[in-house]
Image (tube, rainbow, N blue to C red; front, side):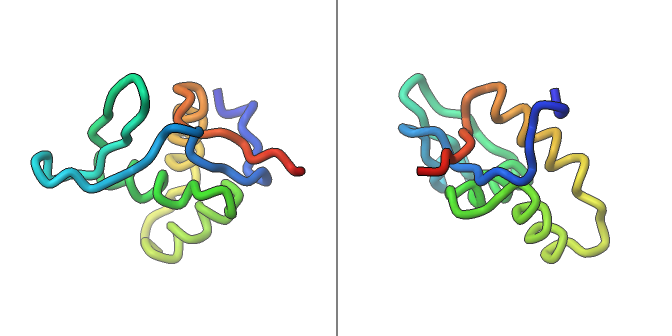
Length: 95
């Protein structure tokens, strides 16, 4: 799964997907045309950074700065690969 994920490419939420705080759930959720996914705190922190301006490597760097006592690289890489497989995120194509 991870071997096809390129950390040097910019990542964005897929068109039609968005993250918002859901008061009733007391959690962030990922909304998309087919439904909604309740996100744990880690998933929300990663996906909030998938704004099309950052590469996977930059997202890992930001998270590592926020959580310096933990090596997050492998976990973030696995999550991004899984999110890509589930079509939650897309690679931003250069125009």
